[in-house]
Length: 141
Image (cartoon, rainbow, N blue to C red):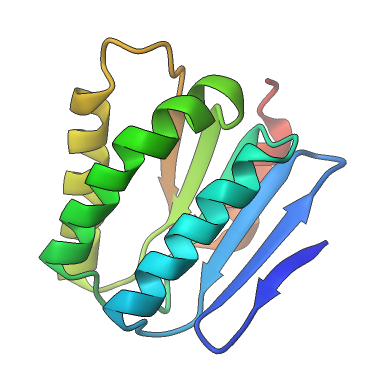
């Protein structure tokens, strides 16, 4: 089921396999990036989701400010989302070194921030969507 499809992102939810997919299509201006992140966090909270697939292949960069903002907003949303909804996350990374580094740093800071919470979040990084989907499909919640 398609949740959002615009020039920047495609967001879908597969209720049968409980997979929430976000495919970034291109560079996204900061204000739009933040609006999309907030909308998807709200949407995830209202659905039966257990697994998340995020494809960053076509997102060339995430600014330091947006990465920092994402961590701050995650303190509000992700503590509940990871506790109650998402337990497994597959991330397809862009080729750009800066984006890879930004995502890895953000996930490490995320883990550090929520280390005392019962999030049970398992994250794996992939180079292509079929491999990531296969891993998610085989991962039992």
